[in-house]
Amino acid sequence: MADTPITEAAGSNAPQPQLHQEPEPIQAVRLRHPWRNFFAVVLVIIAALFIYDAAFNRPVYSWDVVAQYLFDVRILSGIGFTIQLTVYSMIIGVLLGIVVAIMRLSPNPVFRAVGWVYLWVFRGTPVYVQLTFWGLVPVIYKSIDIGIPFTEAMFSLTTKDFLNYFVLAIIGLALNEAAYMAEIVRAGLLSVDKGQDEAATALGLGWWHTMTRIVLPQAMRVIIPPTGNELISMLKTTSLVIAVPFTFDLYARAKDISAVNYKPVPLLIVASVWYLVITSILMVGQYYLERHFAKGVGDRPDVQRPSVETGVIGVSAAIAAAEAARATDSGAPLGRSPGEAPRPFDDSAADERDAR
Image (cartoon, rainbow, N blue to C red):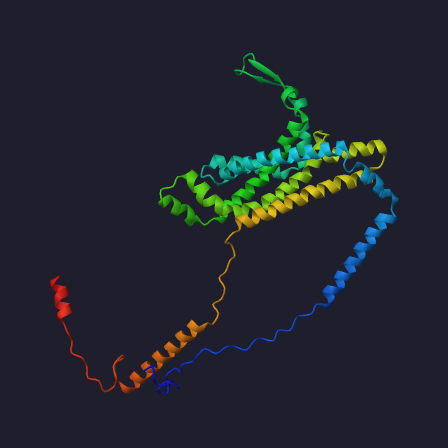
């Protein structure tokens, strides 16, 4: 059978075997985008004109003053307080946001209601108003009395002694951030298929192990990108803590210096430069963190390319098809030549199997 040349399958209606043929290479023509190049050149020209005008035709920018205060001790101190506000507020906001998200997903209606009211209040009011309110807490509550109700207080704490403006600024930022982080975490948890939770329960895993080893690792690829954006947004929102009032952050220190030298524009440029530097560092960290948690997502195997092995498989299939067609036309069963007599049935194997 191996020496029989195969031309076409026997029979008028039999499918004809087709061997693999190497396709001709596609002559691809690169698509041209003349308008894209035109608008790119226009934007570059506009940017160059703006930079030239700001550098040479606008003395109000006072670039010498910018260079003078870029590494000023007061500015660097403000950067330190800004980073502290960002880190502390985000840590508290993320932890509290996880708690609120679990409350929102809880089957307990009381927990769900409390979580919804929290989101309604802190997402429905401006953060500047909230910070102003927290700055007034020492005025509204001058002291905190601890003891049995309707009796004389056992301890009395003055609010200003343990709630300074730095702590109040952190509390205001963290409580506001927790409302947004709760929705981010809730969306991440809901993105994991319910079957994952059911499979973990079937394996005997408890709630804690199911959440930390099954659900959260899969939800992180949904949680990380918006959390990184919230971190960057928190860095810039710290400029509003002047409403508390806390006046040692980066923006407040730049504003204090400009109130002395009467040059607000160059000090605003100094603050903007440092905000851009810190934001750029955070964006790089966010990129690598997203890439780490997105491993395996969106990967697709390469399409199998023709090889010697696939060619052999194609020839074997063609031989099998031709043999089947000849057997069908001759009326002989598949696997026996037309002139071959039927083989006697040997039922010894069947009897032996029945005896066992």
